[in-house]
Length: 362
Image (cartoon, rainbow, N blue to C red):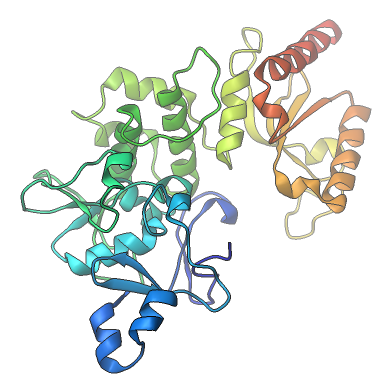
């Protein structure tokens, strides 16, 4: 399906410490009032039914020419992406503060998890709607209302809708983590048996937010006060990592986190350019430069998660050259693709075999 809003020159890339592909982009186009479009003659009723997407009561978004009308099944039963729904609800309820997964896109989180979650607004009115995603989706055009706490910290992160208000990044993250720990919002997750699926989802969230926001563990511990138990927050932060650039990289790290001997540990995003002979200068890349998703330098083991973009001939050839360069210097390289990583026993076996070989040669 073509994107509802393709990249636009004025689209805003949210700030964060991670690489560009780990930070969400806010689309420049905003929802419009259905009534205004009709009264101005900009659109007919046929246009509104076929060329526009209703994202909230009375609010629509034009679908670009050539793009298909989105299927609600792709968004957990909601009419479209979270960022458009959140903007529309905020326009309809300017007294509300976007919170939780509704606020997450404005802090740079990618669309996958937010798109299937309800729009939560904090406002001084009675409680309305269910925060459990599957229940809220029964009324897909309605936001969920909760009363705000007295010490709520807010920001205005949307350059295209400056009056839009959200909770600050640390509060947003804790609200999202609390939601997944209580199973009010779930998604498929790959996890070893010793880590609960709720913890695995929470760690994926933390990793993603560490990439797209400048929050620290200390910020999150403060924001979690009286909401998430200290022991739980410490456990999750101990499993989290600032280097994971995708949810599947997080899953791979969790799968192998306890497979190293005492005294050794995995590091994320390890630059092995010094090993393969690349230039080390990102502005002048040379064949041979590489960054391992996970690596243990003392044991010279490098792990890679290869997403779908590695299937192309060009990528495969470059990956093979990198593997040869690393093995020539005594490194062991293990690559997992999006299919092989789901075979957990094989993943464990390959990594444990590599560890055993490394220990015999150290």
